[in-house]
Image (tube, rainbow, N blue to C red):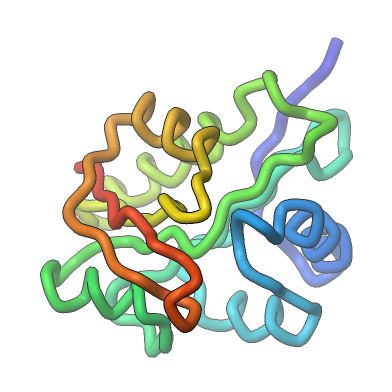
Length: 164
């Protein structure tokens, strides 16, 4: 029987987290160890989902008061005073279909409610199209609040929110 455990990400996890991110870089953005350490230092929520002790997924999010320099984060900061911004969520191809991403988001929702944060924000690519992310976020109740071009005009993102 497979057991799924969610826990805080620790330094010893970072190499695996970078590998998971690299495998999905077309949908996320590049992240080496130095970048991950920096993002971790800014994060309000950085957890991993493990199956029988093996990291299957991770979710990294920032509080609205984080000094994070990111065009999408800034878009949300102009519209909302209190939110969590999901910088990235990645599930290993090996563990897809086990609801690891849903369980991480449910854990984030519980955390946000516990600390009084009413909105979770994220974005996903429209150009190039990221249909799996759209379907996943639709299922969780996210709704589009706007769009914007990023990455020097190479990506169009859908800016999404859901209430906790």
